[in-house]
Length: 121
Image 1 (cartoon, rainbow, N blue to C red):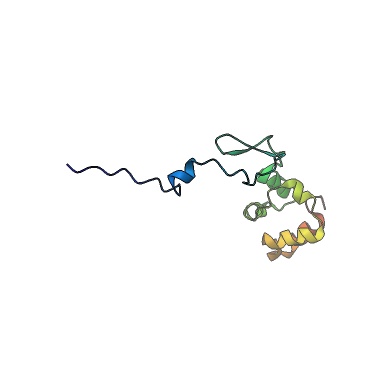
Image 2 (cartoon, rainbow, N blue to C red):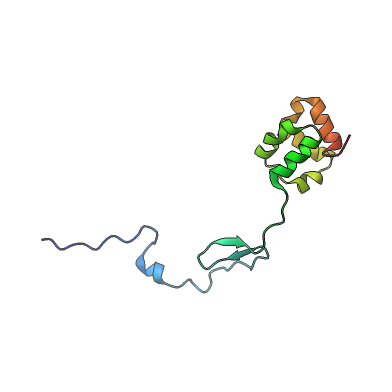
């Protein structure tokens, strides 16, 4: 039959010569990270596990303690899932969270959250 053609080069490399060449010595190198480590296979992993914040479970527990458990899904959907962050908010910041989570549709709930946060009234 006919002579067979070699298979086309893979799409991921621009050319065989370029893919086999070592990286240029002037290629920028990222500074070593305190938090992450680059594995030989190219994956990036935490050097140490990040400190636990309790995630949305801790936020849900805190909202339940102050009678605002109906807002757990909204807090989660808007990314307010770090209890330490939420505990550090001032009144103006809590008001912004109330707006973002739809809490200000019920002024009594929003007022309670803005005034007391997770504290006892």
